[in-house]
Length: 250
Image (cartoon, rainbow, N blue to C red; front, side, top):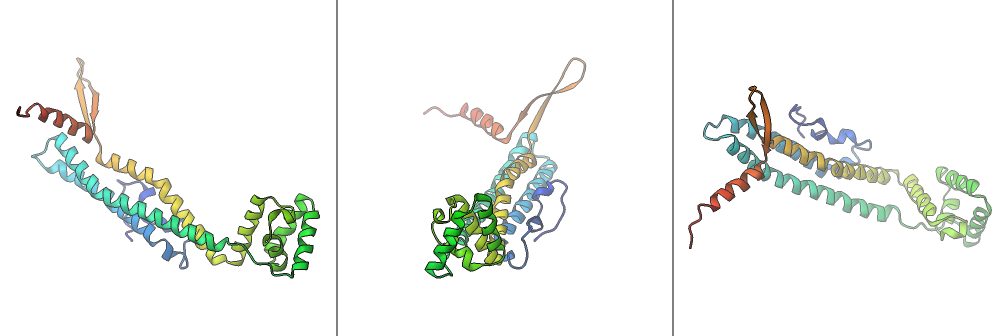
């Protein structure tokens, strides 16, 4: 991926997204390739828009309004591809996250005999809430499959747990038993969150790169004041309205 620095573009949109994900390493890198590609493509597209804007200023056949429309046309062309790849990267991450969650957080099978599992659950149900949670936490941290699966492999109420807490401990158990898969899941979630959070930053960066045309007036004291700004869309609408006046009656 490109590692160029471009002061025209916010550092939050530069390549190097992997460095901001704590769980990025050789085991998670294959799952984040599409994410990195989308960010890299967005960065290059923004560079292209800035370059087009600089190039338009050199074209003596274009006035300020025409320059703005030309740059906006270019931005629309390049960003349509970027937005598509960005959206596909998010969809891929979400699909992979859902599939891994289904596998990683599946119900567990009891490792103890039926009678022993029942005794363990009765013991947990007899404890107060604090000691019950601490005991289950210690069993998970110690890798005590007999205790953990007896509690987590049966309905929550049998051990005195509410469903949400039961589900939370079940996730903790799976994460402790399958750390590599848990790390991959964390990395994909972080990447999806990053893409979602930075989408708005990306669209604003495109608007900034394209810019607007500022129209100034001079007052009686010779001071220039901003009268209004023109966006590319407003210019197109003005041109369209003008052209309609030239329509030949049928």
